Image (cartoon, rainbow, N blue to C red):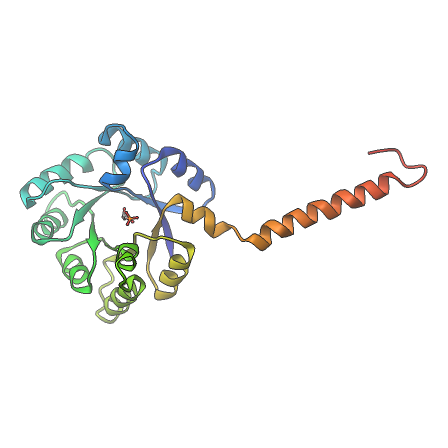
Length: 229
Ligand code: E4P
């Protein structure tokens, strides 16, 4: 499974990149708005930071014609741009137009909350579908179950041109569950990535090793005839 970072924050992207686990970035209008800079400017900087990996950027238009025009404009920013299109009738038309014919633009179909939405998006030509499991859990549904379904049925139907991005991840347990479900990608907030690397017993273990070592040095240094080190 690959990890994408779900953020538009440059510092988070730089730090996550330095960990060696980052394979892409997903943004959305809410995440970009937090950065308080022009969208195009921020997207250009993000794309430069992760040149070898896809960066998803979402359109805000609502008609297929406008979505396609906006997508083509955004895709011109960098060669690693993937266009995020919300699943809906106009969105499907836009995905079909962008992924067929000349000058293809890869699409990540977003705001997916049902298997059928994922199915239509994949058939229309989406390179990625993004089920939002956290938002489903938030209203008492089974977000992981949706990811499991999409992965299993795509596999059964041999639909291998579309990768499943488990999105709206809330905590490390979600990551474990979507990995077990076979999701191709998990897009995670930086806070979740950091939580994944930690464990209270690891912290205690490090503290104990440091304390034991400090005690041993002190004992060695206090032996008669030993120069203080
Ligand atoms: C995915 O691409 C979305 O940006 C994201 O995962 C949405 O998550 P949220 O429910 O935390 O806003």
